[in-house]
Image (cartoon, rainbow, N blue to C red):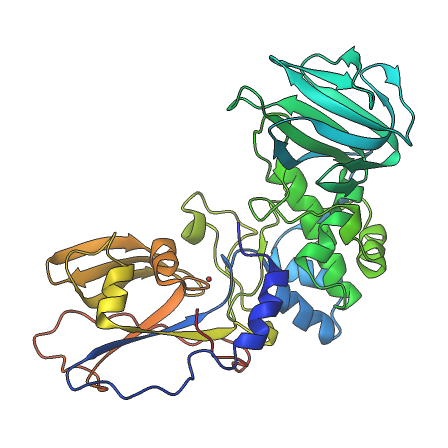
Length: 407
């Protein structure tokens, strides 16, 4: 769904320098495009850097959650809830240890075993190569709360292995784990463990709510372990601080109308979050409407800048553009105001493009974009020119801490 927040820490070191390198002035008549952007991610729901800012200014996790998810209430799960996370796809055997039982057989948790595919069935093999059991369409191996999967990692909960639908030999490797244990493997991969507890606890509740409300229909799984769902790295990524946040909010989820809320979140909003229908082109959701985000300026990509020559920007937009780019006309902005729709005026005609397509083609971090065209280092004369309507309001709340180029 987004580039993981922890990857943004790398960009923090680059941001102050990118886009500011000395370069020769433009040749007379040469076209340069300056694209000013805000934010990092899709901008829907909680801004993680904004949550950090609220925590730094003394706000608790309940305040943070209610700010970003307007109209929701905190509720508590009744009983354990299991989520199934796809942690790998393998083309041969799945080695594991730590299990005390699988497929109706008792196992030695200190020994290694293998799951292997036979047609549409999964079988269990011992370390000596002897087949121990026919598990049917799924092997389930569980132990005392820790299972080690060869080449993949260590996880809480149980291992489940099912044949894939797409290949005659491959297997889906799935971690079936209680959601309260699952979030322990999510929080440190979505928010730095050094952040204040209020921000980490807000992340814990959002991650738990998201896991139970925004699921996929997979072959034996309902969540991915990457940004397609949320980043989950199991036991080896856990920290004391993030586990404290998970335990302090155990069982807590966001509710709206009696149902668990779809708690979308992204790295930083640029100063204002966006309404979900303007990003994913589906129905509006009352608690996922754009709100001001006054502390998002902590984000290294709160504000950033891209620079292109005329041929460069035309090449990047070639899949959507007719001819060479003359101007960008934004026809619809969202609440933030991210671009929802725009027109590209090319030398061969006018085409329509979505904001997400525009940002992706240009390598932008987000779709909150404004365009400025220079000819020979100066704005072109408006006389006889195509519409230039690419300007956007500046973000509310906070000064920019970075100008950067660049995902």
